[in-house]
Image (cartoon, rainbow, N blue to C red; front, top):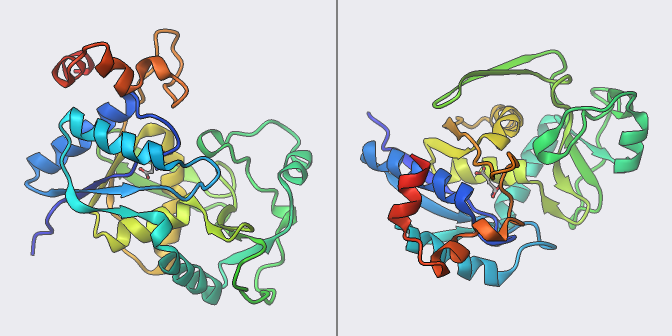
Length: 274
Ligand code: GLU
């Protein structure tokens, strides 16, 4: 049986969409279209401090203006907490997570040298802070009031073949360390929610920005621990501004709605990024 291609757009409503999102999402749509598949839209709104309803409205408008079409209804992560909680319970049952009371400051103080952790700003978690493997775990409470981390298999080389960037590899425990799966404010981490949803939505290929390549290694470990099949990945190069800085939601000058009010058309934008 051939699997029907299912892709997704997964913006976070923490600001206005910019040219970088537009290009990645357009590529996602093109890949779905060429494969004769479908595209879903997911509202990644778990960062309660930064997500705002007006950005959801703006993002829908901007995506439609750009010419993107998806299968309705849109999926909203904040409405799916029970699913993520069930995945947390599965991870807990397999013993691959542990409760962590260390603060970010503890972690930074324990590091001897600056570390790489760029896209999620997460330094490699010092292994000396881990409880011993196999130590009995405290039970999961509801609400969760403590951070839970995934114990990565130190020294294991993880490899995947990226549809755009080719072979990618990273060593667990060196290039990335134990990462959060659930936060003490009782919310799942991006990594866990993303895996649970991409699997539940039957996504066959994830198209997203290259800043998330390192997250992919973490997510592959979660798929394995949860007994789920991972999708294929296609990481798009990031758009940079004329100073060579990667676009972020603070680049309002390159926000799609700024460009639109200046009279630019989606066709012009597409012609420029080819
Ligand atoms: N929501 C994430 C973001 O806007 C992207 C998630 C993903 O594509 O996996 O950065």
